[in-house]
Structure formats: C-alpha cells, structure tokens
Amino acid sequence: MEANIWMTELRAILRGAAGSFLFGVPLLYTLEIWSIGSSTEAPLLLIVLGTTFIIVLLLTQIEGFRRTLQLRPLEAVLESIEALGIGMICALLALVLLRRITLVTPMTEALGKLVFESVPFSLGVTLARSTLTRPNRNRRRVSLPQRFTSPTLISLRDTLIDIDATLIGAILIAFSIAPTEEIQLIASALPPLWLLLIVAASLLLSYSIVFASGFTDRSERQQRGLLLSPLSETLVTYLVVLLASMLMLIFFQQLNFQEPWQEWLGDTLVLGLPASVGGAAGRLLI
Amino acid sequence: MSEGAKFSEPAVKDEAIDDLGVQSPRSLAEWLTLAITTAVLVTVIGLVIYDWQVSRDRPPAFQITTESVRFTDSRYYVPFTIQNTGGQIVRAVQVRARLHLAEADDEAGEQQIDFLSASERKQGSFVFDHDPHTGELTIRVASFALP
Image 1 (tube, each protein chain N blue to C red):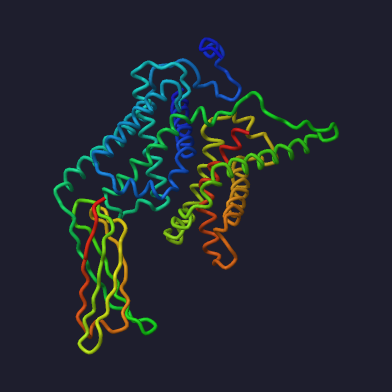
Image 2 (image 1 turned 90 degrees about the vertical axis):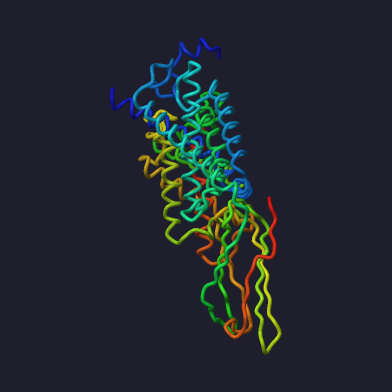
C-alpha cells in the first residue's frame, strides 16, 4: 500500500509533466516569448504569475492531472499550486535543455523567460487528463478481409497503426515549428555533446507519456503490435519521428544539400524533441 | 454523461482504477509534491522581488572590455565584451569603435546590440585594416533606447 501511494503520485506527476510538455513546447520554440520574458519588469512578472494561477485554479474546478473526480475547494487551491509548480519545473528543465537559460544568463532575463514559459506549461499540467486520455467511442477502424486476421497480420497491422499514429502526432505538433528560424537558432547555440541530452530527453518524454504516466491500460499497450517491449517501441517510433522531422525541414527548405551534415543532424534532433512529444501523444490518442 | 453516472462507473476501460474516483485524504506523497512545488513557487516569486529591489535604482551603464588583437587574412580582429552594469534592460545599444592613425585615415566600425538586460554580457568583434597597436583605439557606447 505504501509503495502504491508513491507510484500513484509519481504517475500523476508524470501525467502532469506530459501534458505540460505537449501544451508548452510550441511556445518554447518561439523567439518572441524569450525576448518578451527578457524585457519584462518584475511587477508585471508577478501579475503574469498571479493571472496564471487564477486560470489554473478555474481549470482545476473541472480538470486536473490527478484522477480525483470530486474536489473540496481547498483541495482545488492546493492542486493549482502543484500544477503551477510542476509547470514551472518542466519549463525550467526545457529552457535549460534548449540552452535558453544557462549559467551565464542574468537572473532578470532567466526569471522573465521562466515566468512566461510557465504559463503554457502550467495550463498543460491542468489539462493533462483531458488532452491525453484516449477517447473510447467513435474510433474509426478499417475492417480487414477474413484472410488477414491471423495473429501475425493483426500484430503487423497494430504496429502500422502505432507508426501511423506517431506520424500524425509528430506532424500535428512539429509542422508549425519546422519552418521557423528558432530551430536553427537553438541548434546553432548547442555545444557539441548537448545533442545527446536532447536525444535522451526526447526518448524519456516519449516513454513517460506512453508507458509511465498511466494514461492507458498498460497490459493493453504492451501487447499491441510487433513492437513488443516498451523500450523498443520508444526507440523505433523515435526513428520514425526523426525521419518525419527531417522531411518537414526539407519540405520547408530549412535544410538543403549544400548545408553541412552537422546542421542536418542538429536541426533534425532539435525539431525531433517536440515531434516525439507529439508522436507519443498520437500513439495514446489514436 | 451526468455527474452521477461518472461516480457510479469509475472503472472506465482506459483509466487505471487504482486512483480514480472520489477524493480520499491527501497521502504523504501528495503532501510531498505540494511541499516541493510550493518551495519552487516561493523561490521564484522571492527571486523576482529580490531582483526588482536590487536593480530598480541602478540606471543603465556599460562596461566594455577588449581582448587581445587577432590577425587573420591580413585583417586585425578586436574582440570585445560589453556588459550592462545597470539594473535596467536596454535595447538598440550602439557600440562605436574608432581607430585613430597618425599616418593614415581613421578607421571606424559600428555595431547595434538588440537587447541587453541587467548584468547581461554580449560579445562581438571589430575588424580593421591597420594594426590597432599602431594607433589609438577607442570603443564606446554611443546611444541606447529604453524598452
């Protein structure tokens, strides 16, 4: 029972973190938010924080990252504080990961960026359950002819559904980010080995969203498709996401064959981060 | 689905049933989450207020330092670092360099820095045809705007 309490809470926090990244990542890749945050005076930052808290509190009346369906008023306030805090921690991690906040960033600038990015991240925490819970009804399925119903073919079909869902999710989130200059701006400011951290974060986020946060019934998830183990599914779908990211960058002429391979690699991995969050959400929802 | 139906039917297929349903008293784990998140929020709000108190009375001022001159492809590069030592954010900072030479025409360079927040440093370089050591080099901030 004791272990159960901690696992349940960890899953709730991971659910909140998953929602916050899904909601917050598009604004994370927005240059204007960085500069607005950098140039905002302290009193306005406090007003932004206060307003965010009120919006989160209102949303907590009907939504939340925990599964409780009935809340006392005080409990809603406490859960809103938690949502704001989780959103802020996720925003800080994301800003550090993309080197928008480093050890040499002046405090005023770092605080401004953090407070402004916390807004979408905190809203994402509160909306986690409603955005990432899979709808049960009205799902379209193409019925297969009789001869395609052997276990292997069903398993192949489910794997294709997973890859399809990953692609849809990745494109939905990353398509609007791919043509922007932020990708090159972020990628060019990363130290050489930092890309490995981006890869690790993408894989961790993807795994957490699909398997660790308890959005879906785990037994069902683990049995679906050829990609049997959660780890291999995470790895294979990440490759799919990277391929999709690269194709999106080529589509928007952000990459061409005159550019050095380092730029191809950097840009693709940087766009791969939001794309893998989208891809994981896609696999949950489709 | 009405509220009543929601509670009477907690075991929705996709949701784990362990933690779904009517609220039970806060567990130790939930109190810990609350404690950590509250600490994070209090720290951030405290830092915002502290930073505000510390920096509001310091008008913008600048410090420019130059590093050693680099010679590449028959040009002289003078790297410099500018720091806003004041407590306010400034934009459109115009940095001007002039190399006064005794035996040739003066050389000049100009740079504009979009944003420089309190205590922030930015780096750049001026490029000259003549060796800066043979003349008198001055680098200064000519103007800036407030946001």
